Length: 516
Image (tube, rainbow, N blue to C red; front, top):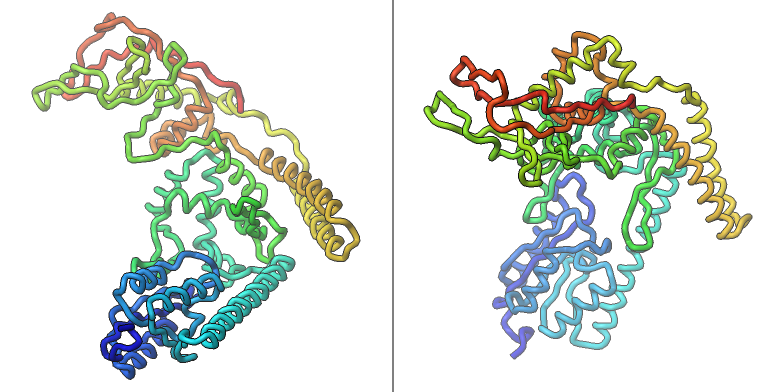
């Protein structure tokens, strides 16, 4: 006995609803689909066992459709006997998906109905031919739509126009007008990166100031999108935002590589004004993409000198919470361990971390407060090609790229000539971009009040990442061997709650680095 010979009332039906574009997440389209399908199920006397909804997800894009796959699995396992959808296009828009679906419903004798086009009659050769022809037509229609969208995007690129999408942070919904309340934080974050701040410390500042991301509708577990929600900035989100060419008025396009990966490429000047200068943006990008840039991950304790201070053997020391032992803590009537820096080589050095950090910071602040601090640690600014000249040369090269494309489209040059000319022009563009970034790069010390007494006030307020960057740029700290036990002249602290460390500053060497 086949399913098709069973009484209609015994059929268990899955309602499948999908809409390919719902950027606002309002679900109006899928709700209408479900309402119409439920009416048909009631009219047929079918029992609805599940409603599967995929919102804002195209059937043509090739991206996974988890609810669709769940439906197929339920049909294979016999958990449902029929499918209801608005139209065949809701179920598939690629030939390979359609044929797989046809094979399954034929094999399992699944009843399929669509509101707009009735039943699939796959019991006859003519019915199967009509269904397959409809699948071919659906894919052809999708390909035509895709070509029109790509052509429209290509025109937008040529004119430097905004091509749509979610509202970018710093800009209005039209992608052109600047939102000053957000733009000032883009300027702040860009300058902070150039000045040596870390992404994490900038995110902390943004959180303290109540600056959040643009509200977005995030996909929920059931495939729908919730209400618009803004979030605190995360380092990776902030990095991605700062790398946008649109921040300095440049238009970016996505380029697909041979291996299937994608990358962004500057296509030229955009129709909107930049928030920061191209010079500042390229400097920020160069810093963020520097492979030697170090960031601290995880929730572990962060140390001022871990990885920076060195043992006399040349190896960097690390912070250790096991620390130095046997320090009396009178308030608790016992003894406790102090955090310490230690060399991984046994029997080398170990030093009380708070005592060493306190000493180094006092020396550094005193050094930076000297009247000749800027002369000692900052290179003089060399004369450079005027920014206007660099901008003009960049624009000329971008125009050349457009001319190469026009010449190739008009068959005035061969493909090889086009590729060679494009590669040469892009090489010159990259050289100018590197010059821009290089001449705008700033020492982490440049933002400090060097040579003034303000250093003593400013230093405690700097984020630990900034202090580490300054220390790394300024000097090399070496921890030398020390005698065991109390140093000569040591006296216990008068305050019973002080640690009473045997720290000996004479065992620490500080080598000042040349100007940079």
